[in-house]
Image (cartoon, rainbow, N blue to C red; front, top):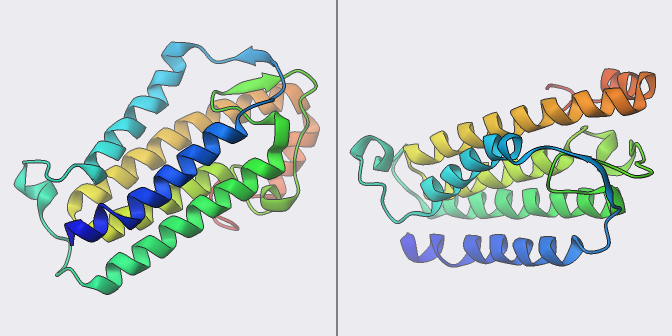
Length: 190
């Protein structure tokens, strides 16, 4: 199992990271940016989640325990979910264009994007990354994956609440109307 875990899924994540770095060129300049202390409040849980999923062993039996007897089908289902989630983030990133930032930011001449993947959920990059983490955790098949997904969800929920406050301050009633008709993370649910 470990040979599978440490080949295809990390390759998907590495390809995604390469694209993400390349695509971040040429963004609009920031008008307002979150502080480093604020950023660390969602980055550190994400780093811990990555470590939980990718470490060969955690060394604490309850987290290293299997959720169920491991089967190759769960690995391939996890790989498919990981790929689907990462592709969804790429669609959202491309659709957002020069308004994108990895830091909570309001750009100069910021535009409110409400179509494409943003018509399905208000934060499709977080949705896609959450799905990719679920897929990676499923492929891992251990309790630590559940903890990792919970950390990712909490980190993104904290970050999106800050983004939403800034978007409401910037776009007012337009953003309120958008938020009233489009779910934050899970289409039609949350």
